[in-house]
Image (cartoon, rainbow, N blue to C red):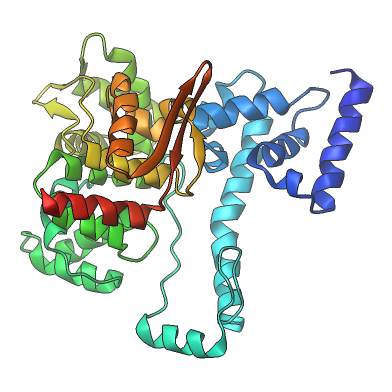
Amino acid sequence: MPEKGNKGHRQRLRDRFANSEESSRSEEALLELLLTYAIPQRDLQPLARRLLAELGDLTGVLNASTETLCEFDGVKENSAVLLKLVDWLRQHYGDKRAARELEKSPTQATLFDVLPDEKERKASAKRKPPRKQVTPRRGTEMFTNAVLKEAIALLPGAPNTESIDEIRAYLRDSLHYSAEQTRQRYASYITRRMFPNGHADAPMLAFAKTFPKSQALRDVCFYRFLKAEPLEVQVVEDLLLPNLGTGRVGRDRIRNYLAEKFPVSKSIKGCGQAVVEVLDAGGVAKVDRTKVTFSMREIPVPAFAFILHSEFPEPGMYDIGKLERNRIIRAMLWNPEGLLSSLYELRNQGIISKVSEIDTIRQFTTRYALEDAIKHLVAEGNKA
């Protein structure tokens, strides 16, 4: 884009945002505007589109590591640091401010809520305790305790409650470790990873009770672990996916990868062990003393329904290509050739509305949010 035209376009982006125009609030427009403050004299719309396409959505872009961002042509360190700064501010101050505002004015509507009348608000307050605010795990932090195997085994027996404290108490009493402090700590690990929003969500509990001891449940728990621990996603992306041809990676290679990523850490061995345990517990790979063996896997339709509606939470029409490029779904090591047939199966079951393949247009249309989709799925599972 010529320099003069570029400046004019950037100013229009700023003006539209300053004037609160609806078009300025799309993910593409927001990301393009943000990038203008780090990248001069360049048409940034193609870069914004490419980042969103490859990383899933704006949250995926902000959550991506500096190293991942810098792999994109046109993204230098300054640009990546700006994106990570916005992510840091969002995660550290957004929740705190929301919590303060909620304390000041408990009847104030949020962006996603309709203000209830006083009678309904008081009735709702009696029915449910307030949910705790949580800050999601960020970046590529290390972890040394997986506890995924235990989560998969215990979740089907969890009480039907939204209270994360009740779930934590159940886990603490059910874990087999003898030390009380260890059981408390591991119960907290499980609740943080399996219930990332800070409350025990009904879809997860219902799914666990309907599909106990199944690969579908292992996949859903593995999915939530990936969302909570981005380092596990990066290990799959950087070590497993590039080695699908051979189908194996040495455990020493995983440790070396972590040592390069965290050169001053003293927890490389523990983290490497935990990373491998997650792959094993999730049924994603087979593990022995020296290597991890893996291949593309079949897609359990119930797990696919859960994860699809988690990654595309709003009912609507979506590009199938966006599903195929989704980082988390690729990290599941599901056979990509099975994605389309799984979509058609969900359509046949009435869980999604439509799958369209007309010329170059490939789309699917969801009809439910996650909770309603899982209710439908559970009803079908109970019939079977």
